Image (cartoon, rainbow, N blue to C red):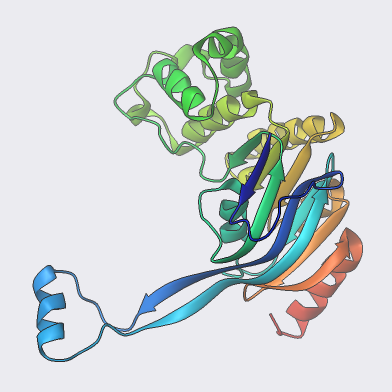
Length: 263
């Protein structure tokens, strides 16, 4: 399955790449004044006040590609554009300029549990969330026991989700989402949630998927995890590319910039 976002020009193949990001920019408008009601907007117009805002570049002129079967790291300080980029690749957001081409089935692990209904049981939410993630009811039937085993929540399957702790909530969401068997995984800080034992279990599962030849785009502040899993890495700052290359050299540049406080 070849998906192309915001195509400008002719459509070509990806030359063995799973993801190609070409001259991508994404902006947001930041208002200078807060106007909540329609009356406030109309009153401002009658007074001759234009609605003022500034344009904020969350991403600016990004160019890179990720090969099939590669585990690729995305690092940078908070607010540098990492999560925005993952949402653009996932198709949740669209670029204002440039294009993103994705070749394969994508599973975005961006905000685990979005779509869960607290008044439904854990079992009912597995079927609901599985459907949101693209699984058929038959596929969920076949994988349900594995989902509950991985999450270690079998005894709570008939409990309403509103009675779950945050850790149980995340365990159920991850265990369900991981069953989609995607070609490409977009992972945003998933390995930093839950208790230490579950984090270890998640890392082992991600490593298993990596060894199976799947493509992974990983966002993490845990540099040790990035070093151990990723062949290459991209450092972002202020929505722009700072360094792209072998993981060790990119992490060294990141640490240097942090020590010099240039990030």
